Image (cartoon, rainbow, N blue to C red):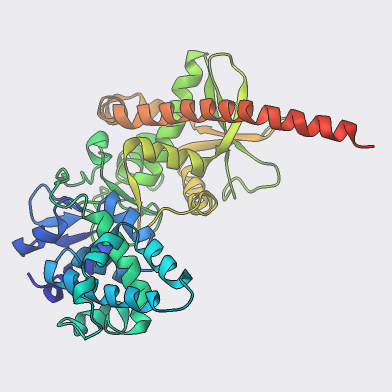
Length: 408
């Protein structure tokens, strides 16, 4: 496969999370960088490639970094970069060369080795370079992108050939929870559009899936909501599992998890939901927001967000309409706080009962041990980290207080 023929497939990979593996030669570029699908017919985007892409300007630069695994193309780009380094070294001020070498990172050694062949002549891949950089690689306007691509390619080279595990297709009924939420899986952000959800956890949440029975009641039972909305839709499922862990933890009477709404916010569309965690001693500590808890849970599961990992505040905004849908479908319930207390979210009584019926026990009990454990462990670790951070900050606060007391 030539770099030009791989361009379309790699753009699909970064744009949709998957691409066909029809040409076996694509394996030379993607083994160790992307997950093969269990059927061998697709490549699936990995955390490795997502992390690399986040350091680049756009998807086309990410595509270029993968294509740089083609040896002739990589050698041609190294010769151009070597020529740019030679130019920078001839300037009176050495800062330009120092900055260039610093930005090349681990690729600097390869660029140095190419100095003997340094040239700014156009390569044989000018058309491809115009697609990716907007100009030939030898043009000065392409240099910043080419430097970033070279640094990324040097990082990717560590993993090439070290195959990632194959990913099984997503069970669209959602009943095989832990199989769906397996390490390496990608979870689309709420409402992120994907052409297919065979290999990624989709981001839709508004509608029940197409296979909901035609004779389903207009106001489905809690069990119907569980089977036909929560289980097939990853975001409602994740937030429902947080509520289920909250319920089970509270029943133990030793620690727990609280989801509180700051005063002045609309429960149906909260700007943020505060998360408090109590350990066995029973004292509740504010650890962060619902978005922060979600990020911690996904990190424990080794699941990345697609197409990107948003800041916590942005994720909270994306979760707001999902929370509203949970309330409307009576998965969560909002309980107004008494005087001087904040309102709280918990599982509704009917939905909690449905979780302990046979269908719920199978899907959310036996088939979801890993997801359930990740929620609780992430919350506990979050609390421990919060306590540790406060202890580390205590001497600083004490010193600041003493300084204030000594100020006339």
